[in-house]
Image (cartoon, rainbow, N blue to C red; front, side, top):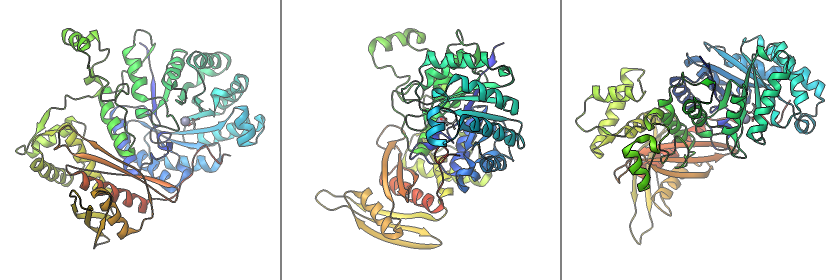
Length: 515
Ligand code: KIV
Ligand code: ZN
């Protein structure tokens, strides 16, 4: 029997550090539920000291997730560790992940500390974290540019202090696979108590090598990989969960560990959820989760695949959750058929009221669109979640006029704090006019950083899924909306973003303003 490879997902923490990828507490809980359904071992839910919102998100994830370990990040500081310890308290299984930089450049220029002080602080931090949980992970930040002798010294000391996982980050994505694998091997061989901890890796993708470096580390004894859905993360991102998992699963002939516990059929839905929430589109040719990942355009390939799938396919699309997107329901489908199909897609309702609301939306959609696909159903559920988030502002009605030779204009009515407001505006197009009308009501003064429209299925009757990314006082939020009318979807997305701006506070970044 080979060892299971521990999958540590940091989409909600490192993924969220990607500029513009901010998530609300409710969105984090939704993603965490998907990850739990996938049987991901550890979910790093955030950096609790960063802000009240981050703390609450980690606490909320720790309260609802039962089967995965929930982890909170903390610098090697008492106040960070106390906050992380509080945030993970409700978890069935909770972990504190504490870190301090160990590369000469980080110690000298960022921390302004001597190596001896760094070792002392790491030991103190791990001991402190052990007061909250016996599941403590330690990371020597920028390990990929640290001196191996110093790494051996600090890692031996933190194992003695009680660290159970040693995570080796290539923080700036500088390493190459052979060298990074050799580093893991060297650390395991040279640290006398290395058998008392699990070796983990955390690779960034600045040179496009995050997955390759992670897999090389696994071949050299790492038994935990830190990764994110769609490879989301700081700068060029982190190692992508779907690529790491599917590489280990597909190449069981060469890996001596396995990912048998991971339900890979949840990968595509998680990818879509993360991309929808963050507004970070997945490139079509992205491995595993890109829309073209299993598409065969060339005649030779198509011919081969028809004769025998394995001529050109090394994985089955269904194994990662690509459905054939069949027409599942229509206008005459009943509540039971609706509920059953959503259950098959992994969506369950917490109450009869939620189910009834979703069914009412489905009927409304079925009136506009005859063929309802799986993707439409998932968008309906997202839409219901968004409405629940829109606590302050709600769209009541929208009328737009767009005519050749005329200036487009919009009239919008919204409800806010039990009062209705109506405004009209002209604009470059109907969407621009609708956004300007909204601004004339709320004067949010925010900057529109991104506006994108995606069709959920094919065909002109498809629902459009819109992301509107707004920036206000340095804080970035992503609003989403879906509708068969893309102007209405756009207004919903803008309103969702305004609601998030009203609900949000400033927060800090884990790797700046250090110790
Ligand atoms: O990239 C990094 O070094 C990190 C640490 C906090 C593990 O994200
Ligand atoms: Zn990182």
